[in-house]
Image (cartoon, rainbow, N blue to C red; front, side, top):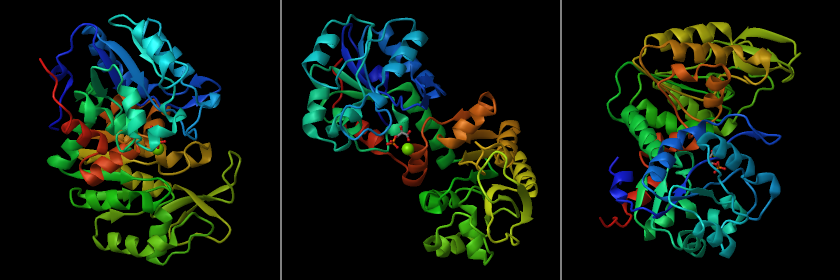
Length: 394
Ligand code: 3PG
Ligand code: MG
């Protein structure tokens, strides 16, 4: 990956290390529903503590509009991290400024402090140099372990490496290594399963994958734009008419498979009446909400034969029981596959966690958008920034 790693920082006891993490986790009623992103950062935090650093963690959480908003406080996250580490993790009341300096100054080697939500300051998303300068005041080194946010050119991602010695954390390193393996020399057959609602979100990644994969299996609502390209009617399903030409081009490669049957309903409801119909027989007034059983079985068979699998995006509205079967079947097939299996972040990572299958996948990525962009572009702004950072003195 060609970027500095933690050892390259040559940390001395008491060094102040700003560590960007992606603790943008799902929280409902103050309870963290999936702490994968927090647990995944523990090895880096532990390394920094073991080397006597004062660890200053910085993360965004949700999408507050550049001003403090208690709804988006990192308080539940700091509390959860304190439980995981078994030490107090004080949360600063602001992102930068004198009060933050005070908390950090009173921390001892091995202590961990968390800054309040970076996006409470408009300077974060604007990559404001003044904000970045405030973030790095008194900081000896910077670590990026926020893989899930490294596709964002935000101040906390690209700013510090311009001015202080910087390194990739363990999680960022592992993510780049695994995804790099898919891009480099994957064992064949290499099968990608892509779902989710929009073709437009995935077009770049499908193109990048078609250069490397043996087949791309399509599910989720984005399949219906492919149906339009085939001349099928799609009832009230979600479609992107301006992507039909692109879908036609992708189908012409002969390596993109689309569903042959679908689960339809009039509404997305747990008690909705459902039917299974052939792909070319969707009636008016109904929406496609999952791949059908024949499609799920066919996709599972392709996955069973694969030596490398990348899965990103659910096959249907799996959060609602009548539309979960396709995603469950694909998740089980990925879990059972003997090949090297990678699940992209976001909804598909949530799905394997919900089905209790995460331990049977070789790598569950902590980045949704970031993993797609890394596959598409071969690099991310946050990684490029580390490459150009000033070197640490021994
Ligand atoms: C994510 O969850 O996708 C990352 O944390 C990035 O968040 P964002 O999409 O709000 O920039
Ligand atoms: Mg996102």
